[in-house]
Amino acid sequence: MIVLGLTGSIGMGKSTTAKLFNELGIAVFDADRRVHELYRYEALESLKKRFPQAEVGHQIDRKLLGKLVVGDQKAMADLEQIVHPYIEAARCEFVTAQRNHRSRIVVLDIPLLLETRAWREVDAIAVVSAPHWLQRNRVLARPGMDDEKFTGLLKRQMPDAEKRYRAHFTVQSGFGFVSAKRQVQSIIRALSQIER
Image (cartoon, rainbow, N blue to C red):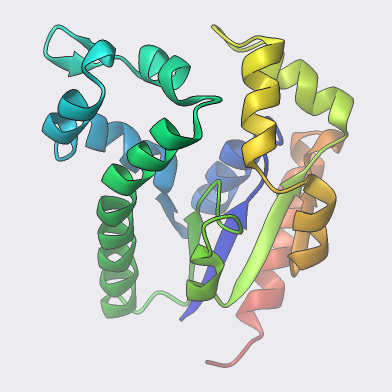
């Protein structure tokens, strides 16, 4: 089985690209979705204890939590220390299940794949990229996003050019959906030809 790590900086179109892989029959582990589940379930008590200011109605408010950790290295490190072990366990469980299911290719959709060294667990890396102006427009169109938060998030992420340099494949999302789908199909064809 070939494990493809899918990554890309905020606003590059990674989530849309992951959906394309899934629509084309490739199982996808969505780390962001799993993190959101953790905030509601397994990690809830630890998060409430460390970040009581983010608790609203016995739940963690993700927007409040984001405001607390962006720009605060200690708070971000604490959040990662709480969440990453759960994510790693869920990722391993997903890969094992897909291996048992005899999947030929799986995708691990991990925003910080290269920054967290999760890249060591994949056979190939695909990065989703777009021009900076398009990335910026996409991100600032999101509810609750502003220049300061965008800049803070970018500082935590490896520069796009370096991600593209380290990747085996690049999906250019700035040319539209049809182009992105063709690029994903091309990646699947290339990976399907590799004997494992």
